[in-house]
Image (cartoon, rainbow, N blue to C red; front, side):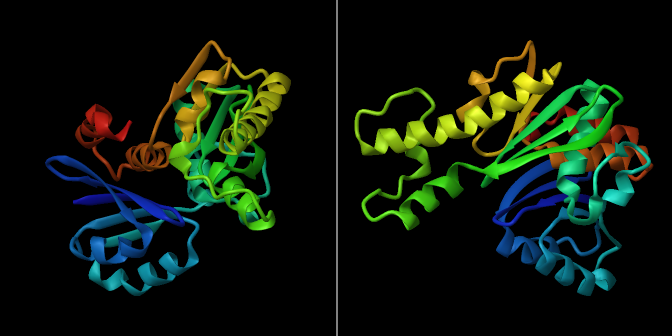
Length: 250
């Protein structure tokens, strides 16, 4: 069995590839106990969480193989015109996957705790982008740095209103439009041919981004690991076909 893992700070996305494909989301704190159940497997991991890296390194003898993917591993498949010292493999895996599917002039917008914009230029080079606070981060900042503004639950955030009629609606409108303005400014200046939106808050912004070709894809990092694995002859043609037919991952 091959296990493909996108390990984030809070949650981890896991794809089990054997006779069947299975997809799981677990809390990152429970990731190591989860994968220990499959100790005879090959494990391919993207993570920026140092604690997870350290724990995986201690488990190497218990698994058939553990590979922690780095930016260097992707450099033969995508030119990286960026200082890679602090560049997470998650961003490059997403860029690699989108470059292979959509070509150059592609903007990737990851909508999580932070909003991360990554751009692939017309030469199909990864050239960097922007990072600014996301919805969850902004709600916490407003609550923690003011005396009367409430902590708004994420499920109460809506992209449907420009002008709020009470405090909670104003917070919702302000946060969404703050983030959206940053995205639109990037789009207006770079004029990408394709926009790919991903992350837990993608639905808040997708409809309001103007581009002829735009796509919402849930698991870019895991898909990037899968495609990299296929190019490196780790995954067979049959396995990669099974992954791309598995609708739940998209």
